[in-house]
Length: 266
Image (cartoon, rainbow, N blue to C red):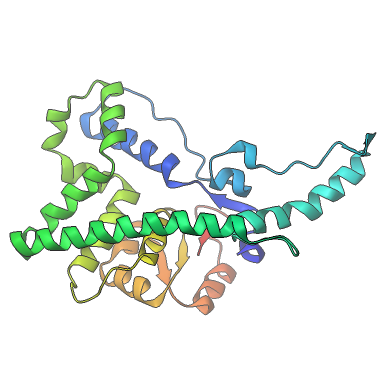
């Protein structure tokens, strides 16, 4: 990933989703309110986590002595990639204990379990309501997932929630990441024989941001087939593949019309 993208990172869901909600509400209700630009892509883990404090900065002194500018520049060049690897890849430097990563993984497993339980509950609801209500259930659960920021932002814009209720499906469709998330879950729920697993949460969280905002996405074969069959990437003119060869061909082809460098998410 680092060899392909260098320091380029995409913003996290907790930054992108509120921006999408605000933009969707303004467009849907024709509000005369400007929508601020969103820096989708930026540099380093600080951008990936929307936390400036995570940006690596070379020290200004060593053992009480100030470091020359050229030395600091060299430290920055050498240390920053390792810093990124340790945080983004969950790695630990040689000789360091693995305790921190284990703690983070334990926390993630708790979240994974809740996600799996939630999807199983949705499957149970569909059994009682019938598959004919699949789309209604998917819209309802997509809104439930964002209800807190939706209520907060609609209140800030002066939009009553009663007015929103009649436009729920339209609003989800107007929010790219939420529409992709709903489409992914809908495709999986349409095939009840395939069990949800905890690791699906990681895949879904990454894909719902990558698919609408990255020109080409490389992911597992099952997700690539599911998304492509549902024509999800086609809506954005993007490509989802499980083939690294296709990624290489895309990157070496004629530059994308929107930019000289394709944005890549794996």
